[in-house]
Length: 296
Image (cartoon, rainbow, N blue to C red):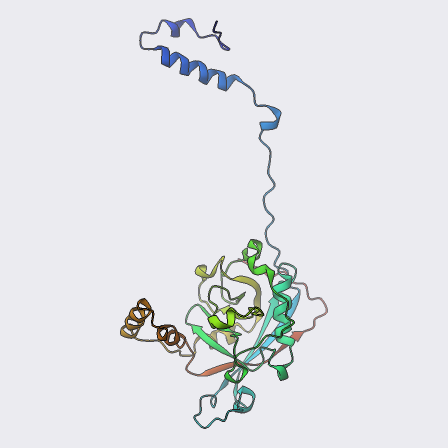
């Protein structure tokens, strides 16, 4: 014998437009609304995620210079940036503030590359700024041969597990002067990346004037420019090699047919036409290093 949890009003039972299906739906709906929520299903207040803490724990300086002699045809096999660029023109110094509390591994590796021994080429010193993207950012720290102005990380450099941690990608490339570990824009050769001892040390600095949202969630922001934005602007204004539209079309066609020369050709795009390099780098010791920058 059937029974109803909620009595149906008499006026509804004699309504001419109500069918048995309508009454069944009405009874089910009324029952659902009249049953109180169980204690286990009651709404609970969730704690919002804590915003990232970009406190500056370390300061690094980088001196940039222009070298007029790096591409001279009479260079010898043993020549490198330190020997060819003895009469270079200083561009200026950039002071970087690093977020060591938020990204300890990334900051530690970056500091190691700034403080490393230049005699073993395990340093950013005397390495090139190899790509400049006008109005966006420039790239430095490309791995490869030291005689070509590229960097060779030390074998004991720690493996950076923050590159696979989603929390490491919480800061955005929202303004000029953002320092970021280059992952999506990494310019290292594929054969170098396949090395089991590979350590990513390539980095980028945004140049402005606007943000670079296409870099967000793909590269790890670990610092900011504290001093020397004028130097960043000067680097960004250096002319670069830009292929014509016809060359780009031929390159796309060659890549479509699997021609390896297409990738080699693209490696020269956005290269600065004047050699700009990191002439010196190191750590700045301060009495009270922790700083909280005003981030937008």
